[in-house]
Image (cartoon, rainbow, N blue to C red; front, side):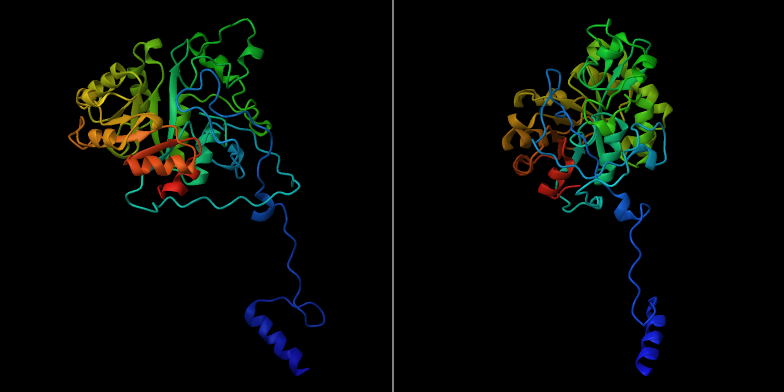
Length: 367
């Protein structure tokens, strides 16, 4: 009796419920509302991200990009849900999603890591789901591509045509070659921009630039905005600046800390610098060392393909002062593996743009 009384008193102090007979009651089984039961990885086959004839620089992710569970738009507040909620039913062999990585840098001198078209190894590129997945991984910076529709609206999509990453051919069979600039924003808003990637993301949409900015703002992330093919869209620089301003992205806080505008077109970068000299800009490309000084007059960064740079070239960029009187920097693309990430880190680059930003961050100790 004394032993049982002592056990009961200890149970009260420790907050343990005793079953009849004085034994500790077993824990309640996990329900669908518990974190363990709710955190299920998304499934479904996906096409290779950032591949195909119009895939752009640094094509291709590693053959096996194992993704933790994808946060769905239905599970988070904020503007314009990009994806349909994933099936929450338990799946055989499912494991809980890992905790998001911390946003604090592991090393102060490590390169900054950018999520290329969002976390595009794990969610359909340039969709709000890819933005959210980057945030889920603890990646502050996301990169995107901006083009203009037939009726003058700005949308976030990489390719000049809609065929690789949407169902435009099926929805509009008589509109070949399905160029972005030949469709209205309303038509593009009806397209499925996720089904090509996985069943889970079927129904994701091509976001407008404003929707994209609002989601990045909601997630407290930062944006590396690429003006895509500006030669097809005369005056697009002014259009982009207008949308940025309307979304509150041209105040001092965003301009100095959270926004960089880049392009493969030196004329486009120069136009942005003339219109908003306070903005940080970047030129995408691999200029010869002797040509670097001319870029320093209107840009702050040179962002080259990673396979073509050397330690001496990076040092030559660093030796120059850019448009804002500060040392020019180098953000390189598209680096998806740990070995390549460590190699470019050792070359002295300042940033690494990746489809697998978590892999790169963990390899270089960045943030």
